[in-house]
Structure formats: C-alpha cells, structure tokens
Image (cartoon, rainbow, N blue to C red; front, side, top):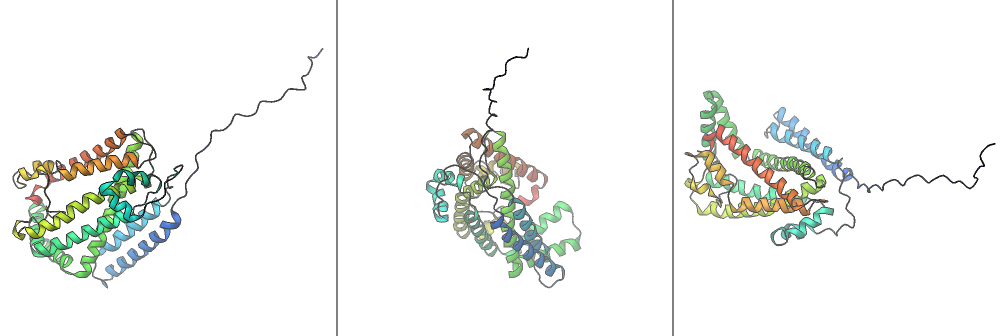
Length: 334
C-alpha cells in the first residue's frame, strides 16, 4: 500500500535575498561636456603649436588633452550613496568653514563631495604668488640659476645650454607663454590631487574603512585650502619684505614662509637634512591633521586610525621621494 498523501503540504518560501544598497548616479552628464571641451581645446592648441601658429609650446595643449581624458575616465565613478544626506553647504561656507569648523565641512562632504571651489582657490593663490615671485626676483635670475645648475648636473653641451636659456626666458617673459604655464599649473594641481585621492581611496579600504573616490577628492582639495592660504599670503608679505638678493630662485618658488626646522641647516652644505627638517613644521603638521580628520569624517565609514594611517603614509611617502630626489640632485637647492 502506498503511504497516505498529505494534501495540506506547502513548500517553504525561498530565503529572502539580502537588500542591496541603492546605487548613486555617475556624474557623466556634468563632466562629459567639460571633458570633451577641454580635450578639443587642448587638441586645437597642440595643432597650432606644431604648426608654429601660436607660440605657446606643446605642453599646454598636451596637458589639456590629458586633463580631458582624466575627467572623462573618472566620470564613470559613481557618486557616494549616503542615507539621509545633509543639505549641501554653499561654496563660501565650505571654503571659509575650513578655517574655523573643518569637521562640519568634512561631514558635509560625505554626502556632497564637491571640489571645484577649493580647487580654484588653490590654483588662483598659487598663480598670484608665482607671478609676484617672478616679478620680484626677475626672470633673468631664475633662468641663470636653473640653467647653471642643470648644466652642472647633466653636463650639457654649450648649444643645448643656450637653447635652454632662450626657451626659459621666452616662457617667463612672453605673456602668452606665461598664461600657458598657469594653465599647465592648474592641470598639474588637479591631476596630482586626483592621483593622491586614488591612493587615499585604496588606503582607507586597506585600513578597513569605506570611502568613495569623490569623497577623497573633495577632502583633499578642501584640506589644502588653509595650508595654501597661509603659505601663499604670508609668503607674499615676506616676499616684499625681504631683499630680492636673499630669495632663492628655486626654494622660494613655492613660498618664502619658513615655519619649520629647515632654518637650522644650510641647503648647500646639508641638502638632505635641509629637506628632512622642512617636514617638521607648523603648516606640515597642520596639513597632516587636516587630511587625517578629513579622511575620517568625509568617508562613508572610517575610523580615526584609518584617517591617521593614510595621512601618515602619504606624509612619509612624500618625504622619502623628495629626500631621494634631493640626494640625487643636490645642486638645485644649493
């Protein structure tokens, strides 16, 4: 006989699938027109430079083309999906808030990772200081020092030295070439920061946190604002208080402010110790703290240890790279 059938049997429902986090959109609509426009402008400048129609050099067009490609590539990275996002702060609130309430700004960047305003502040102040420095110390002094040290280091022939001197004088005295150099500076600032943001993104993940790339990029640009304002504004004041004869054509190109222990060493006699001591100062430690705090509060989820770990890693990595470069080419800071 067959076993009686249970007609009331009901199959168990399938297990519930884990809820997936909502995915934020990609900023393609915002970045694609800018990326394509920058690339086209760079391509046009590159062609005009090759055809010798515009004496601006190949570097400007090439730099803009690279910037367009980078912007197009990172536009595919999704924005952060943060539950219960904060209302975005205005650009003025964010820039000014970095001086008296950076924690609030970093927390706001978690859900609103904007970076354009601090990028422009960093670039404009850098351009103002660079222009003032060249006018104060004169292009002739900068070119003479750079050509002399380059010739000593690489043992260049006389014709190559003469061409380098002519090209550099053109770059410093020609207004069109000078404008191109400022554009290259803007591209360099963005690309270097974008690369460091990628390192921060990976670093936070290694330390067990969660961070979106756009959060890292916004944190780095905002953390740079107080440092750049302090070094460039005070550097401008000191630039016009000191005699041009007391200014170094290379060491003072970034700032004349010396708030670190490098004042204890002479760069010509102890170049490596001079560079190492330059990392022990007020603005260096202030920037270290800002980056650590920003990576902690501006990320989706990261501990204080993760923020400090990534910030210290970048600090020591830059110190090692600059020290190695100085050890290989000490003549430039002598």
